[in-house]
Image 1 (cartoon, helix red, strand yellow):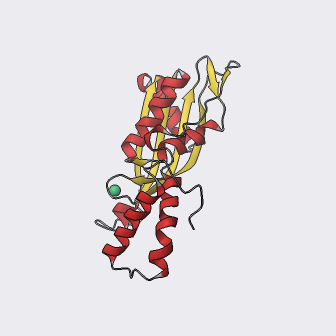
Image 2 (cartoon, rainbow, N blue to C red):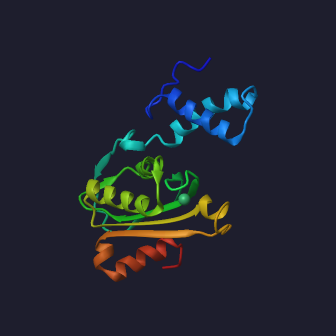
Image 3 (cartoon, rainbow, N blue to C red):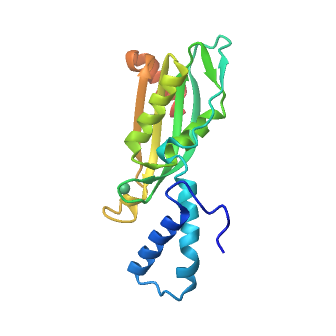
Length: 197
Ligand code: ZN
């Protein structure tokens, strides 16, 4: 018996389970097998979990605090993320570093990884993920600047097609003072890359 909570917000668990069952049939999995019986439910639950931010659902509650007078670069480095590429439905994963110079408000530190999780828990491409996080922070925090750097591996490049095993894709989005002041941008980049400054 599926659990009572088995209705998701992606159109109902049963819809997803049926779709997975169809996939299994197409793969040639026998209908009387344990896999055919039990895998659809598990896979539906899995998609429910890893796509929990689809359609902007489950947006984290943002806690802003008055800036105590901090005027320099703050960096949260290498927050891990996991997502699914919207072109192949295969995993992409890596890490996100965020630098910002606050304005009047600062963001509670634990919100940074929650924002990363929110935007990665949906079908994505790395370019949009990078931009989404930068725009969101720039809008919500009204900081002097935001710098987002993402390094990711894409299973659609590694386990199929080009089979470019282990290659990393790096993207960045800069807003505000990091965009207008090259020295500030370079300082942030050095800090993100853990170079001595
Ligand atoms: Zn892909």
